[in-house]
Length: 222
Ligand code: SF4
Image 1 (tube, rainbow, N blue to C red):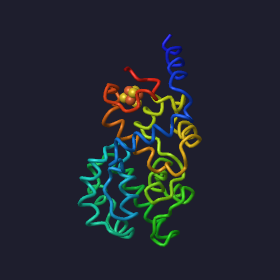
Image 2: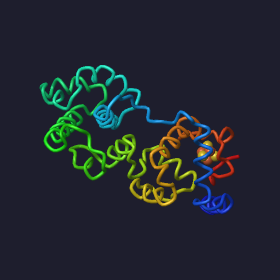
Image 3: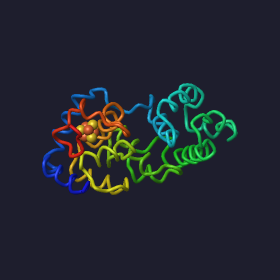
């Protein structure tokens, strides 16, 4: 019953290829400030922030990195201290042992293979220890070279509600999204969904009455 209601609603709002343009346009007008919430000044800080953001909030990471980045400025700095000291310095982001290990491994590889610079391609980023697909996607996109679409919990939920995918697995969702989202929008698109997900299409109680996408969304309650 519920399924046929959703199929009916999907027919009513039209094909996803036709809806994606207006969806992006309206979200961009609504969330002009939609950008990554992590604070960083250089590529190395971006990479470390994204690595620290696993399993915690961006706000929490920003609190920790405000002092962390004053102390650790170059890849060498993360290796120069005993691992316990780095663990203490990132403790509040949670999973601090795994994160410290991954950061130090990554810094070593940056120095040995990339002249201490953060690489910009997915292929190279994925070689860094502890850098998974999501982290690599975020870093590549923020460095102006998006090579995929970042799928986090908000992107997943909104893509499903908006009928842009029927998948549940982030890799498959990304595969669906890159087919319909224009390449020039790959970097901005996830931020638009993330901000809309935080402000309007909230996980437990979507505020459809305040949403600019009601006529384009098969899950709209209004
Ligand atoms: S109409 Fe409702 S379910 Fe659809 S995107 Fe907007 S808030 Fe979310």
